Length: 123
Image (tube, rainbow, N blue to C red):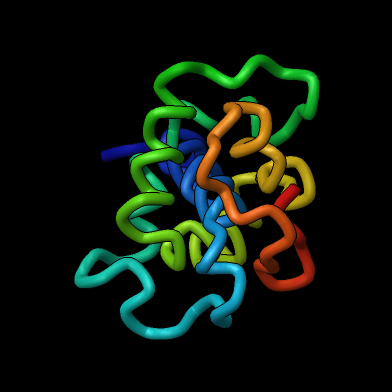
């Protein structure tokens, strides 16, 4: 059985991904289907490589994190926002104000700067 800390780390990463989502910032988090048939908590697990970067604005963002965030931007940006604003990300210790900077820190070109995700704005 996984411990809480091993489960919370992937959740934190998932929340970060939500912050990164551009079009997802427009829709309210928690809406059914933001991540398709995948529960937000499960989608968040895919962003585990981003965990350190969601807590420290000076932390290097890993290539694996950048790759996953870029892929989510292309396929399901609303899911990124849903992850960011989810209770799971809060429980994982993700700082949404820092997490939302990851797309810029990854130099993701198609990020919609200025889009909102809750009270956070994509830089």
